[in-house]
Length: 147
Image 1 (cartoon, one colour):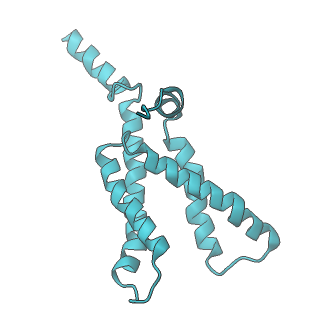
Image 2 (tube, rainbow, N blue to C red):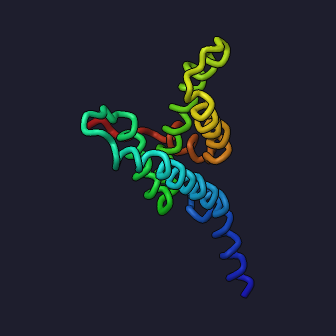
């Protein structure tokens, strides 16, 4: 009985075997679910009902992120590069476009909505991403062989 409780406790602490707790895995799944729901509500209607001559580069990219977020629900650590991508592009937008537009006082009509949605990602992603795992598996670990 005690060994079952100890096994359950260690499974909670390191469910993935990579030092990422079960709680953190659920937090990651919540982030993927936020992408599924949020992007689904914003992007899927645009992709389905666009005009034939629409360029569609950004909606197509975001629809790809939306589809991959479904995989993140099942494989939260394997799909971690998707959350890193979200954090990086949103940080670039905030620093290179959002803040300069804010300080210049020349915001486009969609600025408030864009700044909220993108700013939320810049705030939440660093809290959700297991940085120790990222360090061990993407920075410190040896890369794949070239030949």
